[in-house]
Amino acid sequence: MSSANMTTEKPNPAPEPEALKPGFLGTFALGLKVWAREMRRLLARQAKLHEVRQLEARLREETALLAKLEAAPGPERNLCLRQIEMLKFEIARLRREQEANEPRPAGRR
Image (cartoon, rainbow, N blue to C red; front, side, top):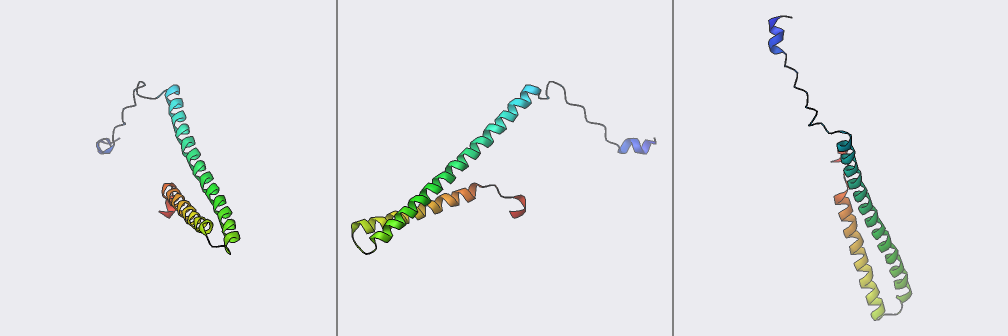
């Protein structure tokens, strides 16, 4: 080798000392932490989806009740209308939260 090659080559970085490398147990513990975090995230997402489905079912019930009460004005009909509006608002709020918390694919940002 010429002396020109010796000056342009970077020396190899020193290997990590064995004490700083995570061993089997350290790697296993890290894996468990990552897995637990992902499970919590998935369970929270499923709970919110379940809540939205329950609210949508309740909205269908209230809409059916409103159809029965359509001919009879009164406090029951007004209460049913307010309940429908509240359910629509709550469903929209939960969906906005879900969209805000969903990770987006890298190509769609």
